[in-house]
Image (tube, rainbow, N blue to C red; front, side, top):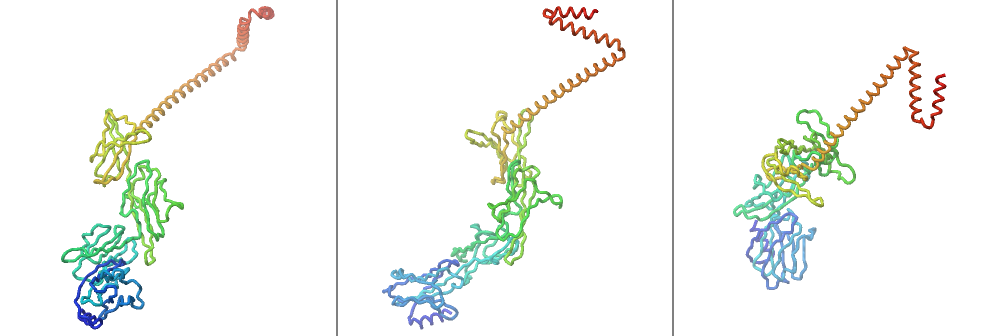
Length: 488
């Protein structure tokens, strides 16, 4: 092959020359610069040719004659050119804009009046995905192609800047069950086998259709009792349908969603964000929730994707014993929890708060010092998985004191109510007793009519005398007349 090229060059240019070999690596889509720097007595007026070996032929890629006219093959776009301002420096490098895989190959640079021609091997490196659009759960092939191929090269892979050690030195990677963990920037590093020196790093971005957030399945979400919480479920585009349900760990029967469980609605929410919300978390809300949906794949078929989201409930429980108060950081599932940290919450002016670390250990219990039992701020429990903070929960002493005061006030009101009802009942009993006595007296009088008349007259006389005494001075004459009349 090389002998044929030399013959063609010698025949075409009629020169006897020496060969200078170079190798260039370029990422697909980038600008490829093929170096050709030679010393010429009259650089500006020199004729320059760039040719590419295709099969057994040399095809002109770019040419410039002494007059300055440039020539390109018919039908080839202006992607290849030599910047003329560089000619004065003896630089006849060929620039290829937006390098493609088919641009890879062997190029020759020949400058008129020189005994040296330059051979440049252009290797185009490209990272590609098959299929170009992939949905979670489908198969995926990732390829790092080098054109033309070179046996002395090896490749290594990186995903989002982190090396993939299990996939070293394979130009093709295959995933039978792709997930969101494969989303991101895939980079192929081309190295020389002998030295290990990196020649080029080519990259491409991969987006896996499905549920973008959360990526992990299952995912754990921590929430404090009484607070609000978001259960994330954000799809990529091409969502056909979606649904939420609560999963029972003990039975196959469906479990009803909490009353405060809501899915977003309204114009401010994107159509792919199907995250759910619980306004006020209760202890009974803990458990496993499932967000599922149907995605449209590249072939138009529906593909099912889902996420299991475990809601873990956290709260602080109080225990008083022998005048000492102990707080316990109660978490419904502690599988990921490795450490607890207790902090004192102090409230200052202008609604400012200060946290003071008190205890950090594997114990979830914390005994409040006697001198701090009446702290009006509160205490915060943070829980970790190794060094990663999972969540926190707050115990508000001021709120608890208020609740205790409310309970005492409620008890006092109950006592007052009981006393009032007792007095009312006694009053009713006294009235009934008096009515009963009056009834008995009337019943006895009715048995003796003459006695009734005597009693009646005696009663009237007694009442008259009482009235007379009060008006004795003013009505003395009237009273004597009444007595004479009564005697008659």
